[in-house]
Image 1 (cartoon, rainbow, N blue to C red):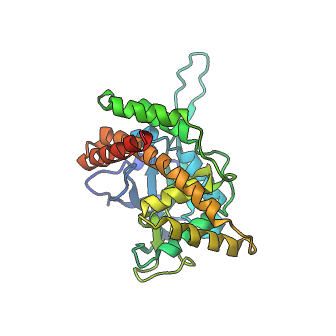
Image 2: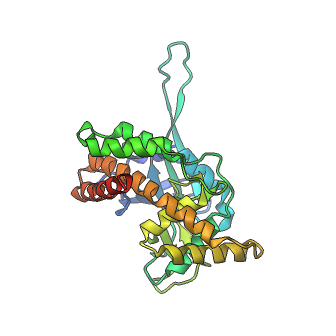
Image 3: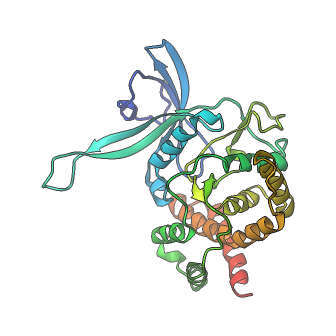
Length: 312
């Protein structure tokens, strides 16, 4: 049965050959509230587990588009690196235009398969994490891309005016006026590759062969050195060692192509303050949404670091 938080069963009306057996809220997601669903499929007389990933106020504020997530998961479904999507769920809303009676399709959520296993721990080594990053960068290129200036501007539009201090204005003006340190051609990037988004068969797993990645909502085309910089920050990796491990594995899977490690290290270091900049705005927007004190604390720490950076 559906738990006390009352999952809206009507959301799944558009799904063919499905009956809702149970629904429970998943904890740990920072961007939105997802649900674990058990659905029965009459045609095969079998039940399967899925995750409901909604389109909500928070996803809109963070610039997330479920249709992009669905398109990428569909594109890489055969790689066994990510959950397979079941369906993008849309509802037909009446048009606001009087001149047309055609309903407008509105995305309300995405249903993807539930991956069995456990969240990766530090047993899944830093080296394996960087190798997994390299595998992501070999995936087909999405047609949409992350532009850091545009994403920062998007976050800024949703910030409460209480945050508009002289320090934050200085940081915003500085980065928005600087050219992006793009170093490499676009590739498929995850942009949120932490161990918290890696699913492995058991806590003792230290191989990428069976590792899978979840939460592709921020994924887009982009500079791979930016993605690697984000991964280094998210997992507190040693920068030089991470670049070394990443380049070695990229060379291995790219027919022994030589990757200039110094060039990659320089590129990653150039992106690090930009990652902090995006994280600062993200935490402030998150604080406005959920009023979690730790979000504001993280933001203030990043703000102080960036003030020191721009005033060097």
